[in-house]
Image (cartoon, rainbow, N blue to C red; front, side, top):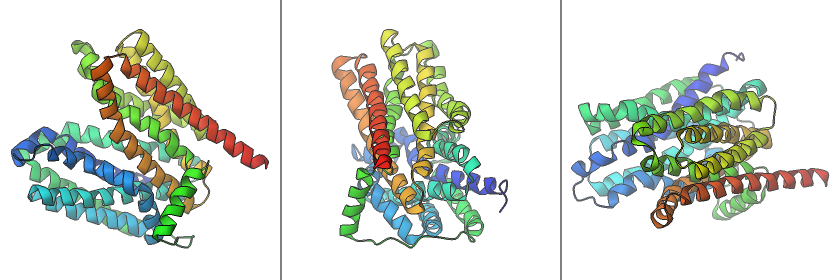
Length: 389
């Protein structure tokens, strides 16, 4: 396959990632409508959205091991078909316990996709393409939420919630059919790893003891703790006249900076150093938000600085890890830490704001950004130390 001929496949894998992110977004954007479907649902309705995050925390690394054992092509295609079947089942609007069970299965499909797809992208991209390709991959969550907010919710309001789920099933099935043909000639060069309870424990220990495998996930924890939580709790503090514009622009600015300045820097610096620049600049932007509370320009600057973390964290995976198995483990750890950050960020930030007001936002976010910078600096020092031995 020619270098230029790889981009359609890379874009298709990114499209599969959008389908995985839509497994979150399709329920998030219609959450206020679920009460009409399940009037006795109560607090259980919250689990319909968040249960995928719990699955990711518990099984992120296990999913990486299974993906490596099943092989990347089969895991990706199986996850797409599983996701399509689950969405069709959800379109029937089954009783709430059944819907919750379907969401658990959907969490497994989601994990397999977010582990297998970036591993395959890193494998098929050339050295020159890899930074841009993985930066593009890093936008899958924000783009999927934007698409679902702009198009998915209006579609659900006009055609009904079952139609939205059915459309998602068609999307997943379509990418499964396309990728089934395109990935057929892909060769697995590594033997499948062992899989057992003992091996699961050993793999977890090995990942989080490794200054190479664990590094992207370690930073990703602090990024995800901040990104969704800031977008969630910040709006009430913004001037109502600019609130909508600022909140709509922040994810777009993050993506734009990641795809432009981030890609430019990745061609000149190691990905970890771009991530560290992102954490440092984010901390400075939070200081700006402390001095000038909820300043619109500071909010946009913060989104841009976080964009440097976003793409470069995924680009760091293949830079730090040569083998497909190590990259798979690193992507599994990122899924695990990302879900942990997303799960903890908003409730912790909301409780702090309820107790101490606006000041707790820059304090908590600033602490997280500084910790991300410090952890990456420490792991980089560990890698240099190991090279000198």
